[in-house]
Image (cartoon, rainbow, N blue to C red; front, top):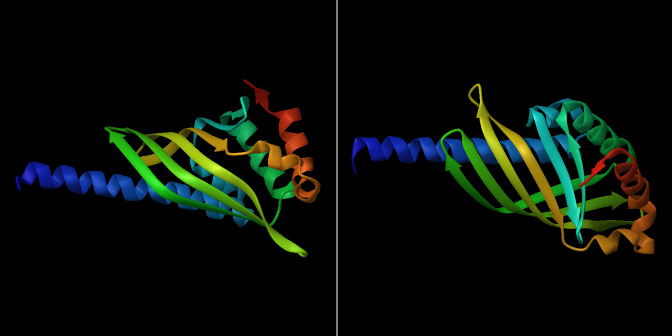
Length: 168
């Protein structure tokens, strides 16, 4: 193997691990109520978007992202975000990432599966660090949010998102 190819492979592997770490920090920060750490995962103009059944809501830029994570922490405590099946494509200082998402919501009476779907993300390396530019959560079945048993826990957050996000 040529030295150039080995360096290229090493660089790709390091970038891939750093990208996966961004998403691990993202999930742990949300689940541990650390808004500041969650925000560090995004670029200044970063976008978080929820897409389900043809409906899309966006939160763009750090001020909107801060409001989103604060509402998530306040209105939807007890979450666990699990991300698997990571696919990463890297071209220079830009990357695309896709993974499977499942989310659990812990309540005294039981643990609910509150979300399943995929995350689709675009990243950029900014001053040596990978940052999320645009992250979309594609929700498999948003109709589950209105199921009576789960709705009592999810409805306040869904109403907040509808009122405070940008519908696209």
